[in-house]
Image 1 (cartoon, protein in one colour):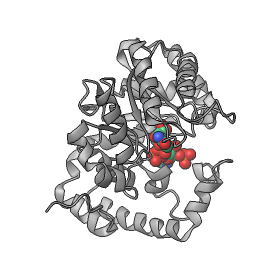
Image 2 (tube, rainbow, N blue to C red):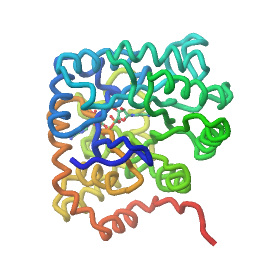
Image 3 (cartoon, rainbow, N blue to C red):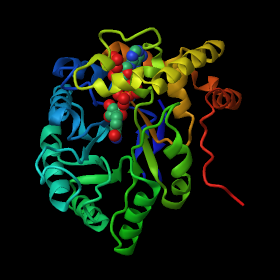
Length: 329
Ligand SMILES: NC(=O)c1ccc[n+]([C@@H]2O[C@H](COP(=O)([O-])OP(=O)(O)OC[C@H]3O[C@@H](n4cnc5c(N)ncnc54)[C@H](OP(=O)(O)O)[C@@H]3O)[C@@H](O)[C@H]2O)c1
């Protein structure tokens, strides 16, 4: 396991990290969560991702209890929460000063920690002035309740505005963004955000590196009963898989699998290592509904050298989705 700076910050996160979305509190109970987290930690993972919105806070409860069981020393791991989807009421969601503050306090309790290492705005909130959110985050930082704050799925312009407010008011700017990034979702990380890495020192903690499992090839011949796409509440994912676009993606997965085989990798290892090969990615957040998946996915790291510039070029040619990025004249 290698460790990378989270953008220009001094925080060194493991190149593969682990997140609780869908799984903890739904597919995975505390006992299995402890087993999975213990395996991750013993293999060098030091960052664990969560959110108030994951299973309505239950994913954080499960993670908090599992980590307490494991008895890790607080200076050996970093944990995150995200604020936005806290509940149905007008005060329970969004990025107002009140909800950003309430949600941080609630996450601290659920995760059983004194501070959050990373705290994300899970989406932009068009009903709250960006100054209000930036100041709320800064206050949590000065109170020692949050160490680094960031955004998730904000546009480059929204991130730049938040950064500008922080610079103007001489307060704590965002450190990182959490975007989706995988072989099918490239625009933000490889396109829109390109100027921000140097300009702001932005780090990225990227999500769904296997496109919710599509990039394992497990959906190539139908939907396995015990898979994410079959879970209640994830009908939207099934609709995505069964759409014309989903069917096109499955065809591409089959072609990618041929290329992966040629270089001696299973497709999901190639997909994870492809994310990891981007120097603007600080950490690739893995998801797993069972320990065997994590064991399997971590083995990819033994084969980083197989992702050569030639392989990257062939993937670009096969998919035809490399973003143009900002043009230089
Ligand atoms: N900021 C955001 O908006 C946002 C959004 C989404 C996720 N995230 C973060 O990113 C993390 C990772 O996202 P993700 O869970 O979508 O990642 P992913 O790697 O794209 O999907 C993980 C899922 O794929 C299946 N899978 C993984 N490895 C497998 C293997 N070797 N063989 C067969 N199936 C395998 C499992 O689902 P099944 O076994 O159930 O099929 C697993 O739960 C989340 O936990 C969360 O922390 C953030």
